[in-house]
Length: 325
Length: 299
Image (cartoon, rainbow over all chains, first blue to last red; front, side):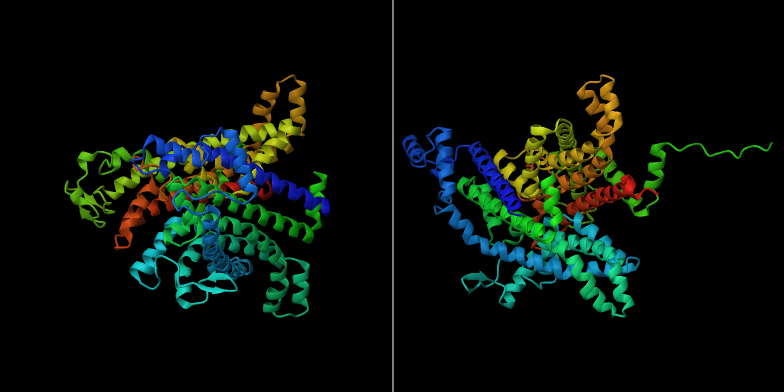
């Protein structure tokens, strides 16, 4: 077990290091950031001054070593546009994104699980067929377009929900959240639904195939023979067995929710870190882009590592097949 | 002696494949839709009421007209017009050309690259395999939308840059798929036979192993092309994809966004619908291909 964890940890470190190198040399070819930082009527001397202050006159490898040192200290420099610490800006916007991703995850389970169970238990039912057709549609629908259509329908035509922004924020135990007020939920609902759409389809499909397999197992037949009620068979015996893979996949998908929130946040003007990234890209704000990428890579690697280790703890076969390879 | 009952002529492999494919009605609808989409994209210059690139035929007075209104030049704009007075139907037909081209070109390039590297990894083994598969793992660990977004941010706008970004996010799926099947094929006797005949490594890989690994690749290719088209539209919508001079469906949708809050829904709605139909059609065909090409479901 320890060897397995160590090997996984090494792989995680490898991914982070590779990303650091890629990100630095990627951003290095972006173009000269100095012109983004000086006023339009700056003199040659002023430009040179800025260049020296930020160390852009140094050779590449010196800049890379500086960058490495900064990464280790968790410091990514000041945003060219905002003038404050890039990492602080990202972290300040992080709770909003996490709230959105978390809400989307809840929606995916609350909507996807019952629909998937139904489709798995009664595969021939017309409603089950409709659910499966809907889930294919959910995979195919482009997220950003659905976002637009949600705004169109619920905000512009029906006027039920606000189109943009985040509701009032309440601070609780040092965490800021808008989930504690009705207005906060009204703002959260559309973007969360938009973000959840793909995951709802995923949960439906996973639950359906898991249910169909489990329903044929001996323990279900036995439970039925014992005379247990249908609701108890489904709620206890089937659900318990199909939940492990679903929880695992959803854990891994949380990272992709954070990544996709770039799209959702920019449509709904949600003040999260994805929207910040897009603004940074449009203004060539190098430190901000780098800080975002590093934060997300770290988040991803951590989630994958935790899921991997948990999974191997639950299922020893994963560990064994790994050491044979 | 009575005559032996005539056996039906043996069916070709493709004939059997085609017959099984059309057994599914939904897949047939998908295939039909896909053919229509490709045809209208190809024929756009002849069937579109207006050439949206031809500035002389575009009249600003026609801008933001609802579906069904008449353009100054006389024809009916069945889907309305966009912010600068272009007929939306014509815009969509021309936009489809760009979206499909970007999707297919990037798909073919990514498939070629992925096939080569996946084959090489499986055939060479050792360090080469470890290196290639590590890069694949690294690539697949990060969501494609994020990788593509960062890439186009670094590369800049333009058709070639978008295609490059899409190739980068797609090739790893092909490489992983091909490697998995090539690993199985490599141990089979026909490979040994080919080598014993003195065929070169390259010939053994490309002419003998590769053709036997193609079935899963075809399935991946449909899913990935749909994904690439959707991703291009997303990037273009976010303003980091194709420029205004190459109005793909994503660019059209982005242009309509600003008018949507004032109730002019059609500028974003119809291009999105065209995008949706395209993606659904490809996915339906892909779903059926997976069932037909899967040997475990063979009856």
